[in-house]
Image (cartoon, rainbow over all chains, first blue to last red; front, side):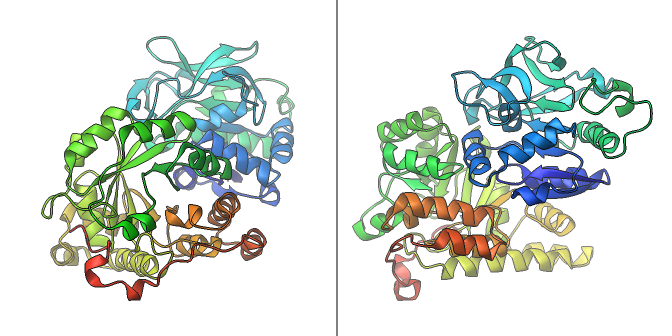
Length: 212
Length: 272
């Protein structure tokens, strides 16, 4: 099974290495034709402004929206969370309006305000996730049907899922954390070869148990 | 991309730059002006920070930890401890572990890179020869760095002690590079990139990104050149796209051949 990593800019190599480490074939995606034959897509951290321009420049918006609509898992980290949000606080145009949330960019400040913290993420089991926040966003508004996967101690929402779209504020790929990638791989396998009796891709939330 | 005004910073951001370096003069002008080059006016750096949403870097002189403290107090996103400015200390680099802001430092080879990483550098860039528009030194440095990494990766473990001694680098970092076959931090190429093909050359030789200094705003058409260099960095292994984006850019920066620069005026030899 192959999972794409949007390779325009940012923490691309770290996601590619994480996918390899769990036995998934990573595909760097720079052009629309790179999306052929992949069963999921990771949108890495980086600069939102840079990614927005490059997505438009290379005609990636529509094919990635189509991939998402077909039910393939889309997993955004940090800037990847911003570009899947339907609304960006401050009124910037969304890039891939897939997730019914409002996201606030650089919610913690500049580079100097980066931090690391362990956060509970029950979908991954009892062990918390070591979360690295770098110029990170947070979710300000949750639409109906958006499931919260993790909050900070101050209750701010930093990880969510809506059907086949997962978005988190922090960088699991920088912390040696593979469980979220495994969850995405499970969803991608299900998308690639739907089992009988399971929900039509994109229609229902994915069963949480499968990822364990 | 190096920028000297908020307007430049916007051009760089619009072109797809993922960070800008706020400077009073681009390196070719620093070279032409001579004299002592120091950190930039904080007001000018703040003006650029206010103009763009992408991260803003600023340069401190090698060893000038108070310039670095000032830049950190301003809230810049990264500090470049740079040989482009006149060194403040000919023995010690800045102890970068003492700062929260991440640093990028220059190198000409693996030993120099690992010494900087040991001091706390979070990113490395090969130096090239800044302000020349001549890629030859950048090629020399990235080739040296990458071939030294490959050589370490091919060694027996018991050979790494001497390798560390010879490259004057900490053994633990040498061992880590040998095991992973790569630097433990991100590596950029800087110093001499002037056209899209230069950027793609740096990437094909093993860079993970490029710094473009004088090459943008000393060209005839900075906005187009900036955009083309971004696209060539992204599609570095796709010659058709590099050809397409290279069309009709106007004159690149004129530049000076690095071989004609006397030893005393070379920037890359600063730092140890």
